Image (cartoon, rainbow, N blue to C red; front, side):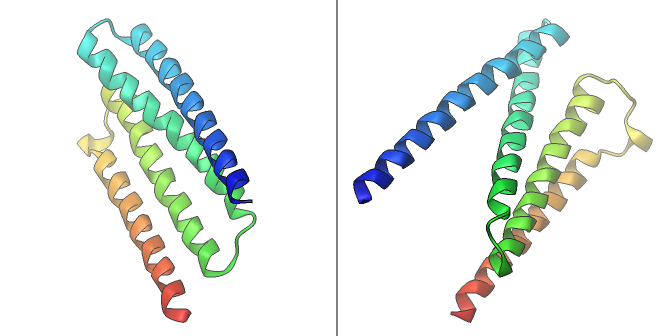
Length: 136
């Protein structure tokens, strides 16, 4: 039984690595379309890769959330919110800073605010997970 679980875990990791490499290639292509300068291409590629990975993780956590309840479900929900704010911060950076599609709203860098909110939700998730330990 343990050998079967190890094999399944290895296959899941292989699928994740393949998906990650596809996402990396997909994130590089828009960077070439938007800017020809190499350093900006790398930065834009990293931002796109972060958004793609964030969306994949959001989907996987959301599917896991369906089968979990109680305090563990609440902590998973906080993790989901934290990842969402991190992805929103990357999207904000792409739209307002890298591509300059729209001017920055009121000159305020919302990127850092979104990142802080994501970290707060991760801290809430850790606190809820700690409650599981104290209840047992």
